[in-house]
Image 1 (tube, rainbow, N blue to C red):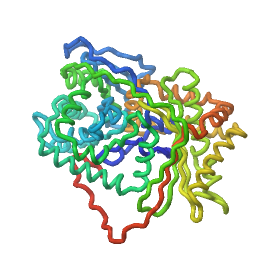
Image 2: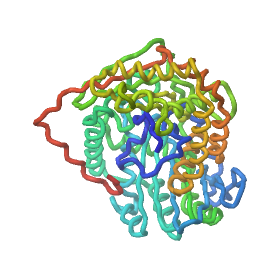
Image 3: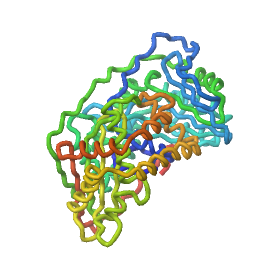
Image 4: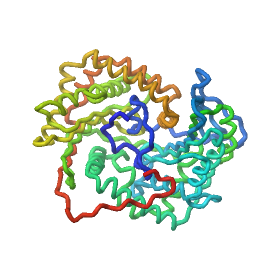
Length: 501
C-alpha cells in the first residue's frame, strides 16, 4: 500500500487490517466526505422480480452492476485466471452513522455478525467457510462495514447463502455480546491506549473536528464501550442492515448471469426496508491553528499536521474537485515514491531532521477531508524543527512549482497501478466496493486516473499556495514519556471466530 499519513482513517476492525490494498490512486477512499443521498427501499416486494443491469459492460470481463427487486446492489467482475472467487458484502454504514453515547457500535456489530443466526450457532459460519476451502474476515471503518470470503469458484453459491443468512437473520445472546465486548475493549487497549502514535492520531482527530462524526474513533471511546448494551447493537443492525443499503461484490472465475441467479436466490427474498434519513453534519469553519500535545510512553516524538482541504464529490470538473485532485498529486510529489521530496529533504544527508516523513491527501469519502504531513524527529532534532521542515517543502512547491519530470513520474506510477491491481481478485473487489460506497460509477477507477493525468504543474503549485496556512491547521505532537520498567506486556485478547491476527 502506498503510505498514507492518516492511519486513523483506516479500518479499526477486530480482525487485523484486511489483507489487501487499494490501488495507489485510491489511497483516500478510507478518508471521509458528504454521504451520497440515502437510498430508499423500492416499493416492489416480489423477491423474484428481474434484476436490472445498471451499467452496460464495455467488455466480457468488465464489471457489471445489477439491482435486485429489494434494492440490493450486485456487482460482478469476471477474472478467469484462477478457479477462485471473492464474495464481499458491503454495507454503507460505519462510525459516521453512530450517535453520541454509542461510539464503536458499528464495529461491535461487525463482531457480533459472527455470533450466529436462527440456524447457525456462534462460530459455525467461520467453520463452514473453512470446510469449503475458503478464508473469510470483516472490516469496519468510518464510511462502511464489509464482510468477505474467498473460496473455490464452484463454492460461491454456498458462501453466498451463508452471508445472506447472517445479513437477514443475525441472532445472538446477551451472554455472547458480553464476551465479545470484552475482546473489543482489550483490542482498544492494545491498538490505541497502549500505542502512542495511535493515541496521538485519535486525539488529533478529536481536536480537528468539532461537529463531524469523524472526530470519534471507529473502535469507540472506552467510556461508551463500558456503557454499550446489547440492544444498542441490535437497534443499529435493524436500522442499517437493509438491502437498499448494501452491495454484494463478486470477482473471480464466474459468469455474471449465473451470479445474478445465485444472488436472486440467496438475497432476493430479504424484505425491503426504508433507510433512515441521513442528516448532514457540516463542520464549522475553523478560524485559527489548533495545537495539542499527547504525552505517552514512547521512544521517539512524532509531529502530525492536519490541514482541512476540499473533497472530491464526483468525477466531474469543478473548482473543488479539481483542487482535491491537485492536492492528491501534490501528496504524491512529496511522498509518492522512493526518494520523493520529503525523503530527500528531511531524511537524507548530514543535515537531516527526520527519521521518517510522509504526506497523504484524503480525496473523497463520506466526511471532511484532510491533507496530512507527518514526521519523526531524528536524534537531536525537535518536533518544531520537523514541523518547520515539512511546511518548508510545501512552501517550496508554492514558490517554485514542480517539474514536469516529477509530474510524469507520479502519473506513470498511477497508470502502472491500474495494471498491478489486477493481480489480486481481492484487491479488485475491495476497490469496487469502496467506490460503490462513495456513489461512484463502475469505471471510476479508470476515469479517476484520467483526471489525475490531466492535472498540471500550475494546478499543483496553486493548491500549495492556497491550503497550507494556519487557519485550517491542527498540529498534534507526541511527547515521549519514560516507560514504566515494571509494566508487563498486555496479553493478546482471545481471538474470535474468523479473526486473522
